[in-house]
Image 1 (spheres, rainbow, N blue to C red):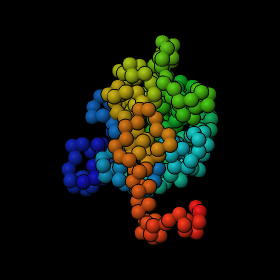
Image 2: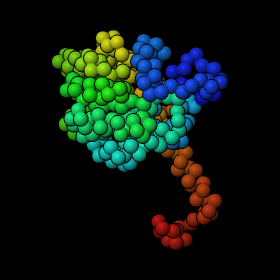
Image 3: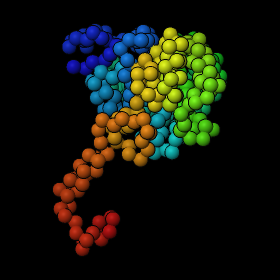
Image 4: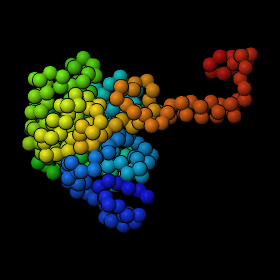
Length: 286
Ligand code: KIV
């Protein structure tokens, strides 16, 4: 059964139900406030999108984290709109029931006009909604996009696109002033028309307060358990397929990195037999 939480309660023949359009999916997401927790994962390619959709994941986030875990950049500040278009299109080809949320990468929303033009490009590739980082300072940009009928999800707390200014990946909301700013940012985003807000690496008590203060769902990552209306995780953290950078809050359910190395070694043995020290010099590694 291919099941998406938006269709709950679900039947085996739910594929007979007309697929929701982008705005219907965004409205359904908004209505999940205080309901069944929203379950979101990043997806960057066609097969992963198909499998995650089959598992009933609600939101497939084509996150700009792809810059790190797919493209090998040190952080997300190297990601371009062209990268995001390419991967959004790959995910959209899976035609998931889940909502496809595409990140607006750094500098693609420097002005309201640019934000709207970039959002339109991601929608053309098959996104159902777009996400951008930042608080009240993004009000006009969010307003420009939502006024054009495109759903936006906000993102406050640890902002990976500002990792260099923030001096690393740190917990946010530690002081009363910082918590108050986050709280005001959440309110401003709600007022600008976002349909949900991602809270990243915010002190759990502050995440709980923000969740209680806004009428739209919050989706947490690194904010502790059950502090938000749902959770999002980077799929490679869940699958254990990117062992070189694993955030402390990651909870892997698999160890694909080890399985990949083992499978490749088994293949190598099948093709080459046992390579001894004596003939190792004939291989490319000799
Ligand atoms: O790009 C991404 O994966 C994200 C998550 C960290 C929420 O924005």
